[in-house]
Length: 207
Image (cartoon, helix red, strand yellow):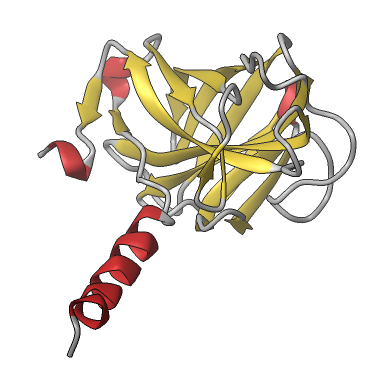
């Protein structure tokens, strides 16, 4: 077997690995975190291609815990810059532990979907919050936040029984109507925690 033949399987494995989005930070909430704000910054990618200038941020604040329900306020900002000349943030999503049984939201992203799917190699997400009643997390409609815009609101996460703590992980946003990135018109972004006052679980690659 030639050196090139030996190298090809390894190269394919590396490409398969790099095409998969890295998992984002995990944040654990309990009653001691009421009033604490957590901010995450998001990149932009389309399949395995990084989209320079495509960015967003979210801030989540636990406002109360009522029975089986955790209540939050949120703020989402489209922070995209040059070379991006246009984009919309049309949804945000994350996974929950324990498993979520219901969700509702208000404000800029007032539609919810449980057990949906995100594009660009992400796959299943436990819950997403959208700008339109599309029935899918991948987007649709023409709303959302354009560059420089911030949207706010609230969301509630309900579980089948009371839980002493809640972990949110794998934070994502969905970008649409992109211009300035060649032939890429839609993309996703993975969030990493930039500031908090509570318990953060490190990314697997950081351990």
